[in-house]
Image 1 (cartoon, helix red, strand yellow):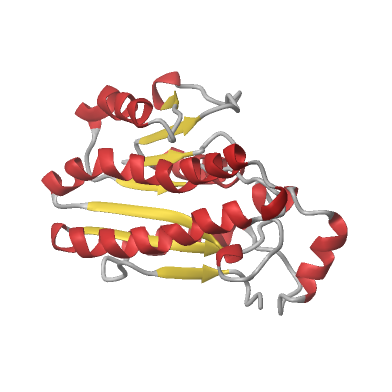
Image 2 (image 1 turned 90 degrees about the vertical axis):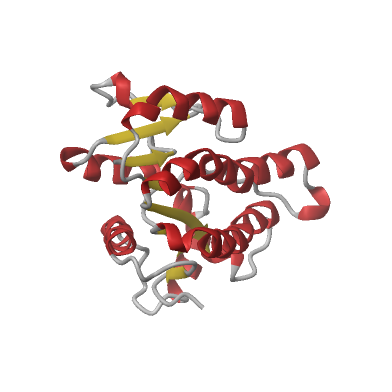
Length: 228
C-alpha cells in the first residue's frame, strides 16, 4: 500500500492519480481540499506539522497497513531575504517540511519494522544544493532531509526498509515553477543542458525505481536535468 502526503495538488496529486488504479492508496491534504476524490475513506485532512494529527490519521487506518510505501510530498515555501524574514513564517516551513516528514516517518516506522518491509521516499530540492536567494527556510528544511534520511537508513536497513531522497529540480507543475517569475524561469532554463524543466513522468519513474531497487538506501538522487 502507498501513502502520499500532500496528495491534493502538484506532484503529490500527480503521483496519487498514477498509483491509484493499481494500489491500495491513501492521500493527505491540509488546506487544499481535493475535489477529485471519489472515495473519502482514502483521503484525509492531516496537518503533518502536528504530531497528534499524524498519529490520529495512522491510527484510523492501522488495520490496513501492510507493505507500506510512504511518499512524503507535502511541503510549503516562504520567500524572503533572511534579514527581512518573519521568524514565525520561517519556522513554519521547518515545522512542515522537516519536522512534518519526521512525524510521518516516526508514526509509520513501527509498522514497517514489524513487517520487515518499508519504502520511504522524501522530496528534497536542488535549492538545498545550489545557492538561491530568498529561500533560506525552504533550503534549510530540504537540506535537513539529507541527514534524516542517512540516519534512518542506518537504523532500519536490516529490517527491509529503505529511505531515500529525490533532490528535485524545477518541474512543470507544483511549487517547482509556479512561484518563479517568468523572467527568472528563462534564466534557470539556460542553466539546464536540455533547456527544459522536469517532466512529471520522470518523477514517477524515479519513485518507481526507488521502490523496486532495495539496494539503494540512504541516498539522494539528483533529478534536476544537470542544473548547475
